[in-house]
Length: 241
Image 1: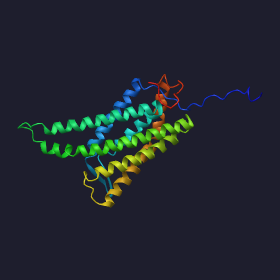
Image 2 (image 1 turned 90 degrees about the vertical axis):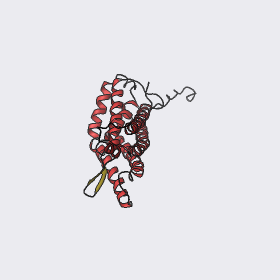
Image 3 (image 1 turned 30 degrees about the horizontal axis):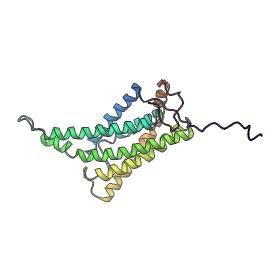
Image 4 (image 1 turned 180 degrees about the vertical axis):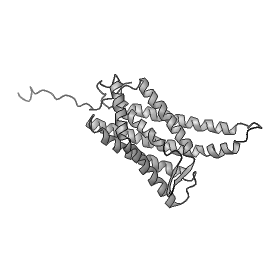
């Protein structure tokens, strides 16, 4: 009888809570991410050396894209993060097509910058391909790991999941990007390539770790202002859209 009258256990639900992605806050972060990725793609066409350390001209911008991605993943969930990554992916492709058209247009007689334009933006398609492929894989991995950790631990452990997800995402992103972009910026030896990968990974991950306190403050700022954040989450940890 005791077994028959036992109170049934409630269905297990996700501990994670996410805001709806239809707010102006989400669209603002999405626009910033697109601008950062496009500008970093342009800067990445320049090889940069600080003594023995080798990197590219977009090194100071690209970590910002991951910080913005962390904000979207933590506040709005994996579905919104996936949408933002795909939109940014499309914007990057559009930008390289626009550069191609600019180069192909016939130059006016008074214009003497065609060679410089071709040298700066000519190889950009390979940089963009390297960047968007690395960005796609790295950001997806970053968002997936962050959301899965949030589903497991709820609101606790924000700093830990920011660092953990960033490490996974940045490693995959850096390895893919450097493998394709190295020859474009003039890297030709195995030693230079390893230098490029290690410096890129350590730098990008280090920047994200340094900015984790600021990222946490930004995330809390968004959470306080998103009216839908306190709503119950969906079973799969996604956001209500």
